[in-house]
Length: 190
Image 1 (tube, rainbow, N blue to C red):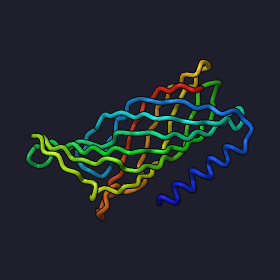
Image 2 (cartoon, rainbow, N blue to C red):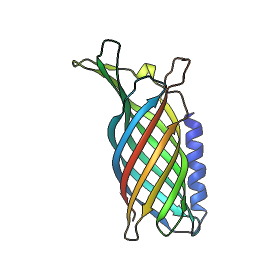
Image 3 (cartoon, rainbow, N blue to C red):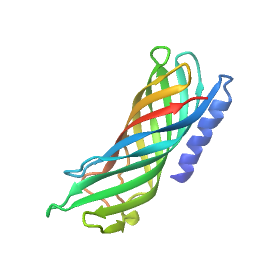
Image 4 (cartoon, rainbow, N blue to C red):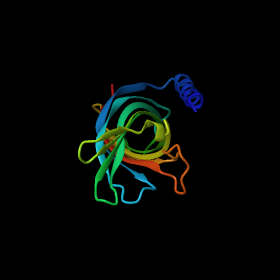
């Protein structure tokens, strides 16, 4: 999987370098509201998403963007005894998106993001904390869609929804457990 991700990233960068259109790059930061599909009673976890991006205009209505982001994902749930547990899953993600410009700055985004798990902990109400790294897949792949506005002076405001494609649990289960996150970020394009 790691070789596949590196190959996709390499091909993407080679394709961008072959085009003579201008580059843009800069920082992004915002909020992530994540949960999981496949766990009954799962509730949202709010977190931070931050990193950098690079994009390149292909023509007047299309650009391609790649990000390198740290995202705090996870969820909360109550067990049968009413005790709340928080599952904290932090990833390094590399989203690759095509941005279709509807007007001068307004764009619709479609793409995928590939992630590597860096932190996985369970916090149980009452103070107990456990590492659950052995139970969670280290790699994640998501489909994403979004809407953004690129201002002429450099500011970018965007919202994305990420839908998990891979089962996040290492053990087999009847219902796959997948990530899902809604992200709102602000960036600055140089």
